[in-house]
Image (spheres, rainbow, N blue to C red):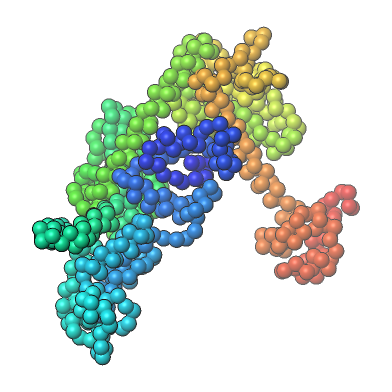
Length: 592
């Protein structure tokens, strides 16, 4: 769940997503305070498709560890899922539980979730293989074996009863078992179970039956996390008619940490050509190129592309098209996510078309709006005033076309004048540069704001109406709870039906313009606040400036300080303290 500016607020998992979301989005009176606070901030929801609940659990952990969302509490620590480690370089390696995978030459198996499944695995291993269950140094020179040898659970390699070569052969069998090459082992256990049952040794048969069940449980295949610690991008492609979706999964250190989705409404019909274009444009940006890129099809210019990627990375890059194995499994997972993304895009398109058709009917437009542009103004009592323009096109916000403006000609709190300036500047550029024209212009505000925008359009000789874009204002009248639309020439505003698809569409676009304007206003305000009178003092650089403001809190309080107080700040000398105070007091007319 994402909040403002795409910030991740919460990562969760669900076997059936609609039911899980329905438990959140209900009347706030029925929600715990924390959940109600979370839901009030959610602006977007993104989801991954996994192959099993176990994969969802592992992916949830990976994403929480990477993003540390505010509303994930239980898993916000640094715990890792457990692995089984076999230090094959040791003379007598023994399975051990670790929570960190290191590049130390050892073999790692897992992760095993939940932890009791791991401990059960170790118990099964020790029942199947007479492994030492101790921590002493094994060198074959011990004087006597322990009780484990006496009861047949260990072959006493510590005393030399089991030779090193025999021990290594047993460890090789353990390795095959942990790698999942366990069919022969399970088949042997099943034979032993049937023999025990036929011999009426039912307790032994039941124990073997339970062991088989436990083995099948703990060896469940996992595609989300790999112990090979590879860095790779996995690319999948799906098509539906003329549209296509390319999904890139980012695997770092063996963990799936994120993805990028590319949706094409009118896609290149050849898969290889489309993927080549995507790879070239994507990795031409400031993007980290991994050592391996997994692809669903072979590319015709694969050698050239690999050489280019190698130059971008500064080390060899391999392009792989697997047909089986772990890479094929993660490629299948990428395809599942691409299929889900494609379904989302098409659903949003259908929803956008329905909203636009309804909006056309509500506003009496000559044609269904495909492109809507919305404007808003943000300022603080006329200071640091900025404007914003956002674009909705074909069912979604088109962020590449967003524009922001610093107000240049208006002083003081004058929203009407600011809107006139912003609308004039933007559409003069569209007219002169031949940019795309909207079907509908939405002004955040009432009659006064709309009239200011209309005056700006008329001054540019831009036709409003049948042959040009329509224009409306969107605001609430004083005392109203619902939205109203204002149109030029209408005596009274028209009420919008609460909850209607067209109303939601206009509100969504208007709210985005408001968010974009506020974000830019805050950035401008922060930048200007940083340009204080201290910048003009010779000898006061960024470090001394930060130290002074941290000590006194503001330039005004610094100007009221004594020379001794200023001199006590780190990096300040007697001469600099006198220089700073003189400069600040002389620049303030109330002090001079």
